[in-house]
Image 1 (cartoon, rainbow, N blue to C red):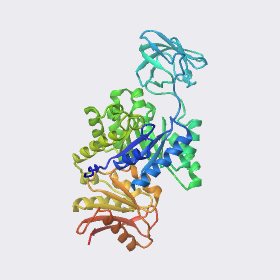
Image 2: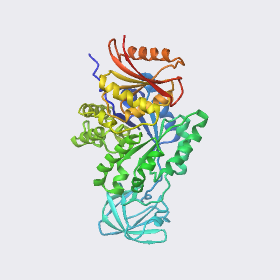
Image 3: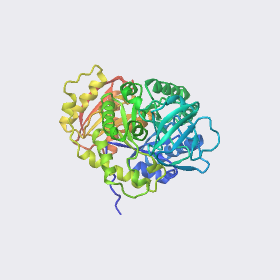
Image 4: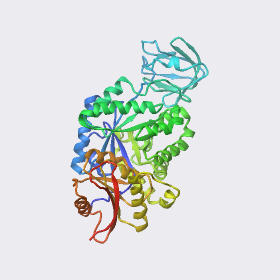
Length: 482
């Protein structure tokens, strides 16, 4: 029986590991079907759970011969209600309900305690609180000491530890908690390639997280990429600053939608993807992308359109959360998402000439990267190859839509894994040679061995001279395979 063809697509897939997918054989299949980044959600599980899962990811990647990146997603502040005596209550519209930071006993139909003790200082009469992802809406009528008095506008079932958002933003909870700081140490113990920071308000939050990560990873000589999860209303006006302080962003549509309203999210998503690409940063689109596949074997047509539109907008990656962590069909979800990405990319019409019109580049290495793209596009080259130490040249090239596969050859395993998130970049590990001509011959042999190029094919290759200096790309060569 013939092996089914695996989709070839430029957009990367991020899959969350959880009880439904924590099996080595299943993880191998998910990686074969183009999962490029595995997300470990630090909101659930123990430190040892994450250490064990990270080891399993590395083993699965080794077995299938395809490196993937690991992303540690920090929990962030617990802005939640406390527990109820019966586990849940039903709130009726028009009824009064109290959120009391000083309450220690389980809640009831009239009031409940708070995990987030600063809520009474963050709100005032007239504010609107949204609980359980906006399914419950409470209007604040008064704040008396530690008690926030509200009137139920939109009722329903409220159960233990459901999240709280303030409409329009404004909760002062710090992005990094004591738990996050311990989790950073855990993530750095297995050298997570990316760290996603929950609820950052500004660039300072990201700078602090980066500093903590670098300190924790110093003994391993490791520096992870920092991903800012855009989920606070007050972070939106500071998007440019946050991008500068980060290596990329996640369009985290769940909490963001609750704070700014569902209707505002699609336009914000497009703006964030566009700005990230313009600033040479990576971007992940997340939340409810294939939500129905938690319980169903096929996606809805709306989900297919949602994923496809993110791809057409130029996102580096699309992310699966509960679909792969706890859903019934983790592998099938990855397979469906792969097909959608491939179909959407086939419909793209690259406008590389327009991308370069009016642009100027002051850096030699960036100019070489753009020259490689432009030349390969007009020559109809089979591939673009970058010999890279830092991954900067492939990142710059990946910010532009090109239907030419880009292969990034590096001698650094950490760089290979980090590049797993870059759109249309296929990172490969190659032994480095200090001699340029030897390295170029090795690169072509590497490509021929993998069936990427064959006799007569034209490809573009970039490298730096002297070899091995990060940020030193200064040469572009057009080659025909002999």
